[in-house]
Image (cartoon, rainbow, N blue to C red; front, side):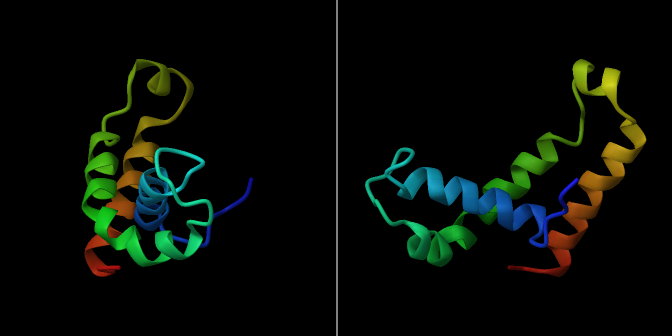
Length: 86
């Protein structure tokens, strides 16, 4: 399994920025990488809200995994967000 070197909050924020900016999604920029680099911090609060929503796994998630591990992983990402303001 690959392990990301970038924190979950930043990765989610970058995806949100990319969806807004890139013409591969909802934007109009054919080369959005630099724009995403400049804008992702503006999507940080949205990323945190998404992770807070995911604290509660749904029935399918609970069925296939360890909820206690899931909760600790999500909390670790949220704790990292508090100590690293981006």
